[in-house]
Structure formats: C-alpha cells, structure tokens
Image (cartoon, rainbow, N blue to C red; front, side, top):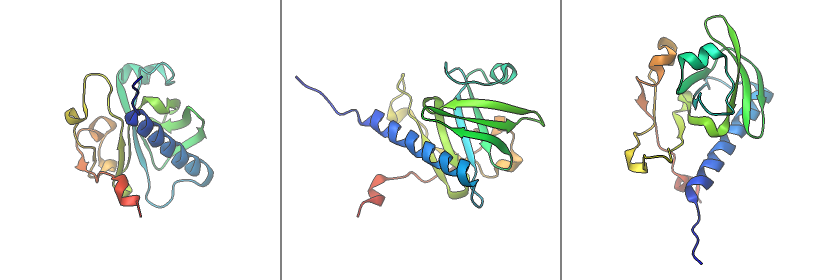
Amino acid sequence: MSREIDYGNLMHRAMRGLIRNVLNDVAANGLPGAHHFFITFDTSHPDAELADWLSDRYPGEMTVVMQHWYDNLDVGEDGFAVTLNFGDAPEPLYIPYDSIKTFVDPSVEFGLRFESTDEDGPDDLDPLEISDDPLEQSEDDAAAEKKKADIVSLDSFRK
C-alpha cells in the first residue's frame, strides 16, 4: 500500500495558522508600527459572510485592507470576523481562512499566496506582488498595480 505526504495541504494549514496567530496578536494589541494587511479572499466561499451589495460588487474575490480603521476583530479557529469601513459605511465581514487567496503586509514586504488546486499548477502562478503605494489606489486597483515581494524560504530559518 503506497501513500504520500501531502506537503501542499500541510503547508497551507501552517500558513493559515500563521495568519490566525498574527490576527490574534492584532486583536489583543493592535497593529504595530506601519504594519497593515491586504487580504484577498473568495467572496463566493460558502462560509464567507458579507453584505449583499459587496458580494454583488465583488462576485469572485475581494481584497480588503486592514490598516487605519477596523473594529470588532474576532479571531476564531476557522476564520475571523472584522468590521471594515466602505465609503463611510461600516460593514461586518466573516472571512474563513480557507477562503483566503493572498495575505500581504506591504510594510515589511511579506506575502502569502495560496495556490489553486484546480487547473493551475505551481508553474502557472505569477509571483506574489505588493502595491507600491496602497493609500493612493482604489481597492479595485490594489491587486493590479503591485511591486514584487520577497519569497519566503523556510531554509532561511534553519540553523
């Protein structure tokens, strides 16, 4: 009987755990320094919760920014809830970790990309990029105009 270690899913689980840990720290202590997050997620995920007008406007995916104003950050085992401001209209969201496509902190050029298990293979994915000046871009443009980020190699953490 042959079996294989599913490194892809193990890595995704670890990366989602990292996001959960970061968000837990932010919930307890606030965003330190210039840190802020661009989080792109699948709005059609069955467990994602967002206002109808947001899901109509972003039927496939949406990038949200956690920076200057966010409220009610509640980090759970399977996802997190947060209230964000959309044109002076606070809207609660629930984002399951397994709906997240990218998680980027441009202040330190850190980014995670979750590879698609559909048709795309690892060679079909573009390198993860971050935006040059996120404050001057709309949410629609944030994903389009980006600057290359460093790829994190686990080898660099080995002693």
